[in-house]
Image 1 (cartoon, rainbow, N blue to C red):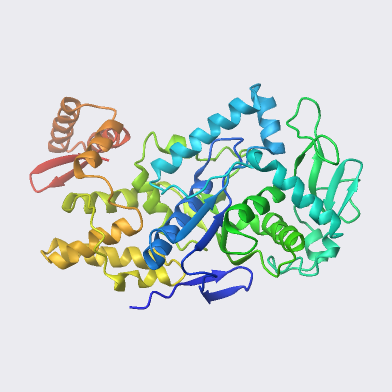
Image 2 (cartoon, rainbow, N blue to C red; image 1 turned 180 degrees about the vertical axis):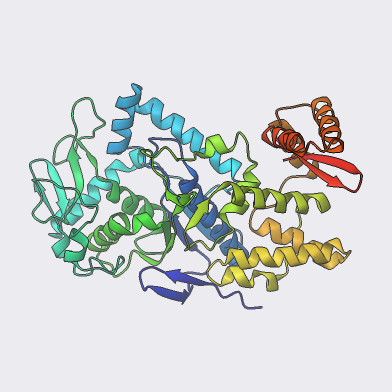
Length: 452
């Protein structure tokens, strides 16, 4: 079977056959976290989506022929503001949030990228790129600030498919008296004595956010590479600005050939927002939900579509994995049937792929050994079913708030209430057990229970 991968390319605004620059050195850069606050479920979506793409690329081209780079932004205005609000040093803050981020990646069963560069380790390269842009007349200095001149790059707006007027109107551009044009963006800004700063030809200061990814992408993958990924919110201005400064500094036609963006995550049909108070952090989720459940839930919708995070989604994913783990155990098998890859090859169609896994599970449960191998290796392909049954059950047990004797006593109370026709009390007991992490089921004359 030819493993031809098709991806929706934001730059061309259409689905395209993926053809790497060099099939022996496939390259992917994904924007990582700005480490100022604990990652939330919206941040988890690109982590899982691009982890699946990483796994798929390795399956197609070979384990050692794909280079995945995901950066960490550890110098940024948000970080400075957060450290002041929390009254802790920037160093303590960034180390703590970076550790939380790595814990979240492990919880979500994401593979480690090949490189995870930190912005603060590449300041010299950033200063060199700014100097190049000034030399090429694509940037200008104004009172210790350096700005990129958007009018010097004719292709500006191609990624977001908008012209300059559309981008200015209602856009997320920084207002500054130092700019010649509202769309111009900062490459270097001065730092106060108390803020992080480095010496440069323009005085002590720090780099602009957009510049950081351009420099780190180029350092680890070259002046042009295959895939650049991130959330839909990064298309403009972040990714648009990366393209402009990289192409102008290096005098290249392209920065990345394929731009892949995942859709937003809402919470109960509302946009997640700190002001509303509906931010779901991955750390808080990990206290009550298995990471495999979160991973499956994030893959249940196509990556380009919005995903609504709600209790039903978690419950459905939990029930699916309960069913799968009840029959099969962790596998180290790489014996994968390529035919089952077809949905993933078609722009990472994970919902269709998961429906194939359901069919294989049904066949495997009926004793089909071939389907069993395909099912287990198919789960592994997207990072699922990677625990053994005992670990899976123990995790659920550890999250339950009550012990076996309590559960048994409550079931007796419920059965007595049902005998007396007091169904209201029986329902209250069921709800009490559910709230404590236990599900009960009535089968004929017997009541069984299991951990959620």
